[in-house]
Length: 173
Image 1 (spheres, rainbow, N blue to C red):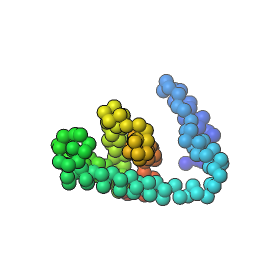
Image 2: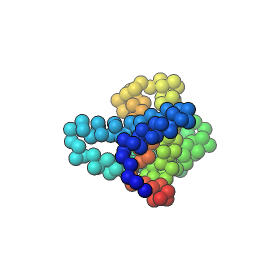
Image 3: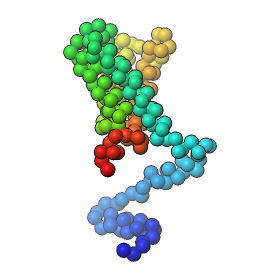
């Protein structure tokens, strides 16, 4: 097979896209990645990205698993604390534990992270509209700032698929 330059392939793909009636945009991820690495103050740290994502996944997993475990093992007490039914509290606990396991082990990582974000959106809704809690809360630690932080951490996991150190990558090879 003859060697084709990158320029020719790019032009050919644009030509093919136009021939099919739509325009294919260039891969901006590559452009942004190059620009990002050029602007990084400490580009040597970029090699630790996958490790950082693994540590983030472990932290998210620990937080959600311990919360879910409390909900699942003692739903009667926890349901009174969060003002939900016993059945919903049990289901919430199982969902948190399953999501935590998915994120930690890297199985259905994106779905698990999105699911836990939905759980946190529910917590924020409850804190804002039912409990009238502010961003920081009455004591500076019981507001919805924590829940929003968890959503953003899960967003990073969802958009990166959890990095390189996930079981999904071993399964889909």
